[in-house]
Each structure stands twice: as C-alpha cells, then as structure tokens.
Image (cartoon, rainbow, N blue to C red; front, side, top):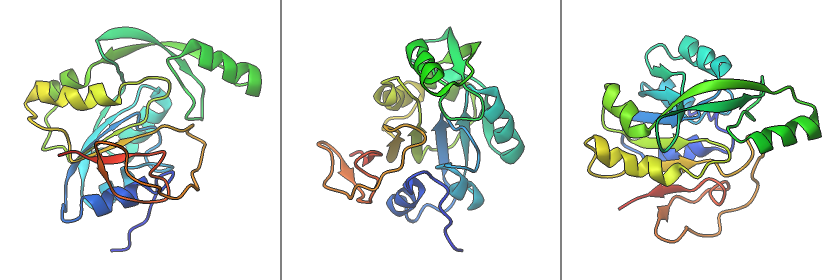
Length: 207
C-alpha cells in the first residue's frame, strides 16, 4: 500500500519508519485540528490504526468526528490541571490559542477576528483514565504557546503506563511554517530518526 503523507513536514513518514512493524497501533493526538490537512495521524488511520483525538476548537472537532467515527474524539483542552480556560478562536486557521497576548497580536497584525470561548480543560491522565484505549504507540502534541509536552508524557505513568510511548511528536513552529532544514543530529538524551524536519519536530525514542 502506497504511503501518502498528510503531515506538515512529513512527521508521519518519520513515525512510520520509527514504528516499523506495528500494523494497527494506537495514537493520541493532542491539538488534532483538521483530520486530513497537515494531519500527523491520517495516514495511520487509513492503515487501520485508531486513537484519541483531542481538539478544543469546535470547528475542527466536528470535522474529526465526521472523518474519524472509529476514533475517540474529544472537544476539550489539555493542560497541567483541570480548569475552565479562555480559548481565543481564530476561525479556519490553526492559530487558535490560550494566550490572549498572542491572539491580540494575530488580530492587530493580520486582521483576524477573535472569539473568546470558555473551554473545559482536563489533564492527560484524567482523559486516559476515562477513555478506553490500547497501548499507546505515539503521542503527538500540537499546542501553541504552552510548554506541556513533557508533562503529557509523564502523565502516562499516572494511568497505568509504566513507560513513555515509543515516540513523541511535538510542534515547535507556527502551524503555517514549513521546514527545509536538513537533519544535523539528535537532541541530547534522545535517539531520533533523521529527516529534514527533525530539528523542529523532534520525534524522540525514549529508552
């Protein structure tokens, strides 16, 4: 079966190489956004993988629910503690954020309309305790303006996972940015699969 990459910078290609041999695995996609365009998980879903998609923006959640009825789709945010948080929605983009200053910057610089939406936020361990799931093969985190990647990975231990998922994908660039930089070496403490996007999207295999 031909592998079609949907991800922004071929992250799905890297993951497929890193997880070679896993036929029908399980993913957790935090900040899933569109189910097809720039999706890290679409190619895996087409190959029989299933997972949990977490998306606070209702527009993208509805598209996920329509495209991925076999997945668990949740319309909420993930943070380091349960709360009700302000989500500053920017329609039809991947720029929605919990950061008011960043939202205002987008409004002033590019003229976007901002909608302030009160949004439920949970922690990753609460979500995984409440939702049935299999062994997690990769965790993808696409959240803007929040340093939550490591806390999400550590949360897995709270719900019966004795180790981190084999792969962790995190977004460090703007949703609209593309990376043309060649791989220069693995980050300290990680064994990484090289590819042209890796310096911006570390896909770390934890021991």
